[in-house]
Length: 141
Image (cartoon, rainbow, N blue to C red; front, side, top):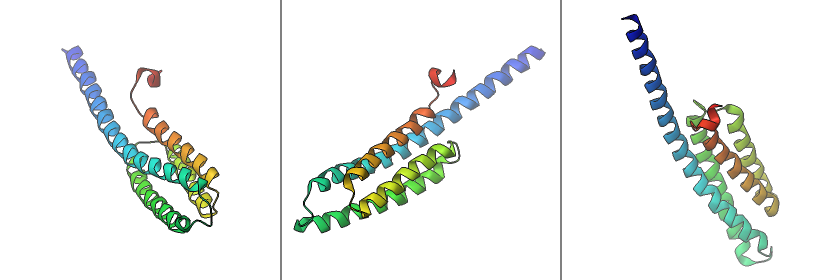
């Protein structure tokens, strides 16, 4: 009889862990997808503006629009970071935040090629968070 209770306890705890893992994966994927869409748009804008001439009349408006998108991304990221910090490693989240801040500063300083590489690094660390938190056989061992 005692073995039966332990068996149900182990099954119950396992089901709870699996359900919790599924919920956290859904939250992580939605957050990463939201931010990923924004950074992809910013990366394509950075590639376009790096090829533009500074004296071009569209340059200033394009740069202002890019800075507005980066500010929007920054506020969105810090909202999503508040959700993710409950169950993700803080140092991984800090790497993404660092890349975002460096991206913003390089854009303000008109160093668009460097900002583009920062945007790609931002995307790498963002996807790293999503992959690291998944419950997969390679992550267990």
